[in-house]
Amino acid sequence: MTTTSEIDVIIVGAGPVGISAAMLLHKMGHSVRIVERREGPQRAPAAHVINARTFEVWRQIGVNVDHLRSLAQDPQAAGQVHWVTKLGGTVLGSLPYERQGDEMLALTPTPLRNLAQHILEPVLVDELSGMGITVEYSTQWISMVQGDEHVNSTVTLNGREEIITSRFVLGCDGASSAVRHASRITMEGPDNLQSFATIHFTADLSSLTRECPGVLFWLCDQGMGGTLISHGSNNEWVYMHPVDAGYVISQSDEEFEAMVRSVLIDAQVDIKILRTSSWTMTSQIAERYRDGRVFLVGDAAHRFPPSGGMGLNSGVQDAHNLAWKLHAVITGQSPDSLLDTYDPERRPVAQRNAQASLENAFKMIEVFEALGKPDQEGLEQAIENQQTHFDMFGLQMGFRYELEGSTTPIAPLSDDVIRNYTPSTEPGCRLPHGWLTRNGQRVSSLDLIGLTETTVIIGPTAKANVDHLQVGRDFDDPDNWWSDVLGLPNDGYITVRPDQHIASRDLVGKS
Image (cartoon, rainbow, N blue to C red; front, top):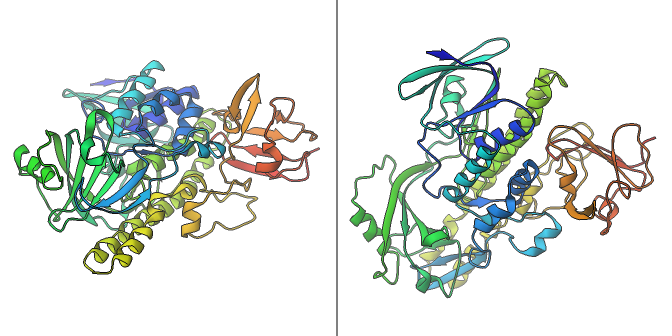
């Protein structure tokens, strides 16, 4: 047994959430280790929706977001969702899939894309490696003992036991989190909504999708049903088929291939089964996100139905909220009580995301109920009613933390709140995006915000007695972002936290 020298943070779990946390803390100057029980990066598609806010977080870290986005599916190919009898059969209805067009550049520098996790994750691992941090794969986190100042974590690699001493532990280790279990934190909410078998395969199905390209195909044939998900690269697909609770994979690859062929009009295409798995859809949130020096992040803290693609994205944004607070406490800039704000800020966001995702899942039942009726208008209306499921920009970008200085209550969820985003300088909101010019280069307003320090931005005629950035002095505002988007007077100012959320604002200026 060996004992390591002390580090600041051990991160358990090296999915996109854990890697994002490691990047953030490393960039802030902290010593981190990231351990992962898997042998390597994700091999199956899993999550595939990367929303604008998550790309913005990676952009702030310094990840090569342009490269990531180049690996994503072209919005022209992945910009629709269809209800079909079978793939290549009758199209019963279609809807746009999220807002991916260039018109969104007025609201974010990085619009949503479909990028499968098994393509994304190795790139993030490479980015982390480029920072000098190696993911410790095949390493099992076993247990921990918390002290007043440190946590001793026991991990094993190839039967060798090691104790890692750290200031804090981040449990980014997914739905079956060992860190959560060790902290005796329970999950609240339904744990078995529906079970699914998933078949990951490759096949050139372009002849069946040429007339209706898309990312999701809901299969409405009375025989099989389920969903086909296009993952773009190398003609990769996932067929997700509902099964009974307690389902155990027992079929051969030939039987799985026959299942896939049963939902295709052209059953003669070449199909290669890559891997199969099963999973259970839940909607659960941890009763609390903190246990002393231990924090739950991502799927360890919340599990949503996939209907909305909020899981991975919420996790990255959890890490974004927590990292700067850990930095402030580790460096002595803030008391430990700052870390108590992580739960009340992020848990309500998870609750809203879970509610919207669950409502999306239940609302889908309307379509399948309408299929059994002769009224075609009823089916068309049922499909039209799914618009919110595939248009969640307001939920993705408009979430707000309840901070001192907020003057309006957070609106309850509605289709309008979920779909539509209105830029706001209300404390707790994300700093609205606008295109600015700094040092001759076009930048987003979000690029003004550093990872560790609060940023004060003041109007062109305002005065401030603290370090600040001023419109017209430190950057140019060719599109009048300050007044037209933020709605602030020339002598006003805003204070923005390192996670790019507004801490305070003054509409009359600061002297």
